[in-house]
Length: 312
Image (tube, rainbow, N blue to C red; front, side):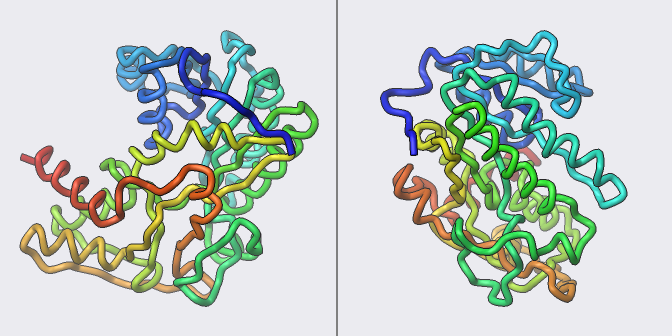
């Protein structure tokens, strides 16, 4: 297994796809402080594109599914591939073109890079009857929510991972596949939606109770980019990108209600064979990055206070 060595992420030329997304945007802004960062997206929102350019990010409009990378350089030193499409099974072909074929076309275009991080999801894991089960990277995949919900995410993410592994070998491109758990620290996140629902006196529907997660703060994600890219290898390395501790959706909602001085409104709608927990084993990631700096509870409190300030 070939690994990278040496200092990273200063003076590099980095491509971030899906740069208008909730996670990709903050990561790109962070990297732009010390690197030449390009952001690829469809850019249907011109105002969002302008904000990225004001942050020092070179923007380029494109669609990874078509392989039309006109105007997109091919000499990036690092690639963060976070672009993805979602949809129900009526859009499966379109979703596969973006998430699976698009990944191959992008990595082919950027095959001269030192390393690529490909963002996957913990949705790929097969459903476990124990909601507190901590999924390891070697746990079974594929027999999960894809067969019980309208989401195409598990199936397309597994396809994406397979293509990324092929590209790592075919192009001798070091790749790290990061299976993202729940991210937090910004309003455009699942915990942020819970806070907004509580503050707006709206009920929250949970697919399970208490529904535990292993959330990671976006600030920790920024700090862990360098060691994760350093761990990229051929064959590709798969790692759970998650936090170090566990918190439940029920706790998130109860805490927000307590701080807001209101009563939580929760409805549980479980489906047979559906996902009831989202806990990841963090051991492999911890061995690469070291511990997180923000606990789930502290991160959530900071998020709540930030959203309260914005609301007033």
